[in-house]
Image: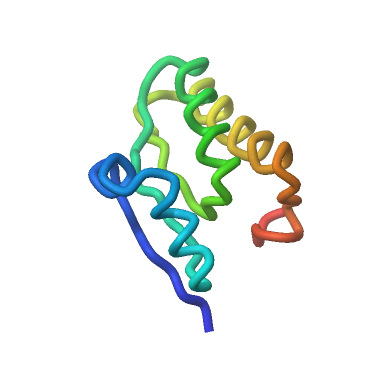
Length: 94
């Protein structure tokens, strides 16, 4: 059984990274619904931090365009890898 939780900006700002860690320790996969939308560099930096938290899913606003989406996805994976989370360990995609 997969247990998941969704949170947005208010949940992240209210509880911070500690809230994410607490839910993960209870066996929840986290879907962080931030809808990031900014220049590619800014989205990449934010996505790397979120990836390092061990969040499983993150939303990016598609109106940001392909370069922004690419920067966000690549940084999300890089942030996760920097804390030892490999694709096969946490994510269903290759």
